[in-house]
Image 1 (cartoon, rainbow, N blue to C red):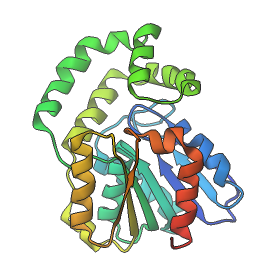
Image 2 (image 1 turned 135 degrees about the vertical axis):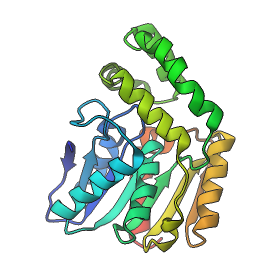
Image 3 (image 1 turned 180 degrees about the horizontal axis):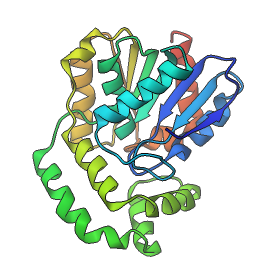
Length: 248
């Protein structure tokens, strides 16, 4: 597994798992803000630009990161955060290992499978994958994600490097993921963040997570769309992590 690190390993460790189709730079600014206080690790998810493995399943990627934590962090992190696909992997990690972290920040993670969307992914992306390298097409896609303009070059470079089979694999996994009953046994303090302008599927997913985990805290982010919290508002995201770790 490939990672980017900020801060020193002599401090408590935070892991942040980026969204599908993005990469470690999803959290670069937040990591820079937190590096004096914490050791921040930004793994590159399987099948993404810079990764050393193809994407297979959310379950496999979760197990891989748990193995990394066992090997390098004595089996537990202070906090793990994850956006979208990264949030699903985080939820799976909490299901596989009840004490994998003390605190978890789940942002915009879908946990309600969509059979129709899942079935359409392979034919749609199979036919339009060749357009990904087209800069104008990439610009349209980028604007639809509502990320700040200065991230376009990172987005364009790394999207072009994602293999077709990996993109289809993680998009299908993203639309098929459902919470495991085992997550009820987690000992982590869970915070669920969701933008008020997200799709109904994501809003309902946030509510489902909190119904399954009554101790979880739901945070609704006024005016924000999918992924905007961590990607566009790193200062607020870093402050949220500080507040969680201070018991706020």
